[in-house]
Image (cartoon, rainbow over all chains, first blue to last red; front, side, top):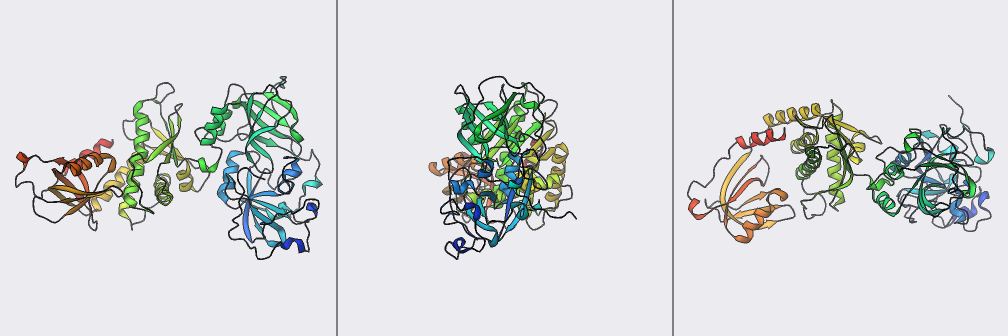
Length: 147
Length: 415
């Protein structure tokens, strides 16, 4: 979930299979009740992303979706269950400046296809992406390199 | 080495974390905060971060996340209005400016927006890292290219010398223009507007002005920002060396530092530079570069050293008519020369000479122009121009030398 517009140029991302997650051996079990989620346009990737968190190492209140926070009830349920990540370090640094206590640290993570799917959701933070993790994959395990 | 551990939010219960910071104030007993339902959301990443909402009496409030744990979010809340919101969204004021109101609250919000607790406290009583720094704007795209803040014993609230304001504005504008001239045309040719910078933010508590370029030429803006960042890098790191392969750009860099730094006799003794170019210079966010009189002197001495090494420029003083003007570059060609020489082209400072050049072209009258060019340069740089009346015309107005003393005078003017 993010503010502003939603786009999906997904430059640099692999998108060579149509809806591959439907046949994935590792299902998105926590999305079972949400139809068409992850959405069409979300793709697998081999890229570095950045995420902000409050604790070092990241704690249980870090890396939570809107659904886990119980925010944005009634809005797009699929987006509520995605994680917010940044493609550009510059955007993560901006968030850190704006929320110095709750976005105290920035971690980099290498997202690979077996982690899940990403969708460029842009907005005022242009490199913002939404990430849907496969079942059993943890944000804390991916974003483990504090910058 | 610590073992890597996997965390899952669902495995944790509320209370596993450190408590939120303690507030040393009485709980707010007003009934205006019962439920928080966002009216306009400005930032949210899986969590409401910055937004407006109406309190129980319908008053518009601004909320900015300053702490959170598993089951509640803590917001700094201030009364607001449409003007403040407009200025916040345009980058005219920072987030802290928008929150810095006579009344400020801390409001703890639980799931579904229910208010758990609230306190009335002053913004100065927030923990230092709970709110963004005073200059931080709401969105990264709003970050000014450069922000200068002048301080000194003689720069006080209510008695800010006009010369200090002029110093900041002139200093950064001359620095910008000098660099633009040094790097030459970049990207698609644009109309070279005399107004190259807009003041984005003005604060007069300590004289702070933020600027952004007016030009829509993104390539050129980026190039200028890179060179300006190198200027700040030179000012910040005493051992940073400018490369030898671009003396023209080096001169512009040193002049930019000199223009922006406080010189002898100026009331401001320190100028703090922030903004995109400072972050670029230091590769840090936020980046701050302090310019002092010592910085001015360093740049001044370095420029003198460069001047000694520079080969003597070719100088020209000639009478002719301006028949063709290229306003994009900007440049003009002098034709029908009195000395029957070939046509010669001059580049000129748009702001200083545009009116004179236009008048001479439209009027068709003869002008005496003086200029100089460094070895390898194609165009002469216009240094002086004046109309020539018939009675003044004699054979002495052929090619002559320019009086060297003028440059020295200009040099001293800067101090």
